[in-house]
Length: 56
Image (cartoon, rainbow, N blue to C red):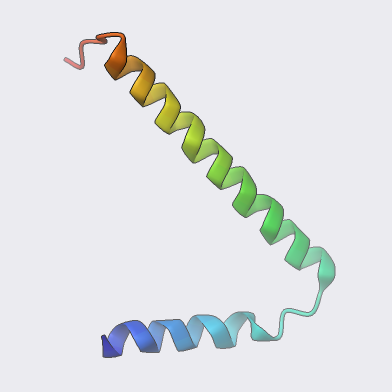
């Protein structure tokens, strides 16, 4: 737990002074892109499992 709190504090301090609005927006866009890509991959996997794709 102590290690988790230390990593959390390092993360918060690293991104606390991110004042550039362009940089903040690009991180937000990139994170939404990653979430969307994750759900596309999840959908493709579930589709393959439901249709009986042989994973050999």
